[in-house]
Length: 80
Image (cartoon, rainbow, N blue to C red; front, side):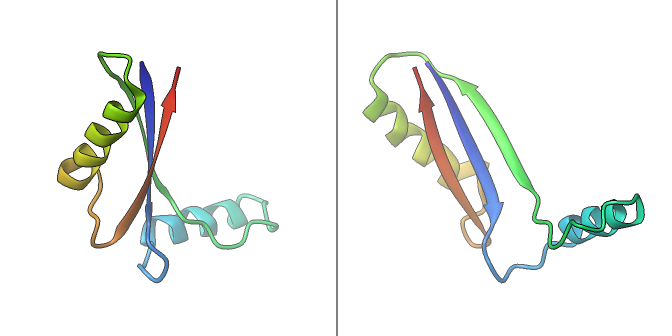
């Protein structure tokens, strides 16, 4: 089974990398781009077929390693 984890900075947390991306896009001729926030996308291959158990384990992985829950939010997507 595959799973996807999206990790993003919480609202109010400064995002200098997102700001740099936004400024660069504006300078490259994309003036329609406003605020940019960057994050992480992680795709995992998991053994097993129990989606509920996988979600529980993924939540644990996120809290222990994949996301810094002080400044980041995460969402989990289980794929069939």
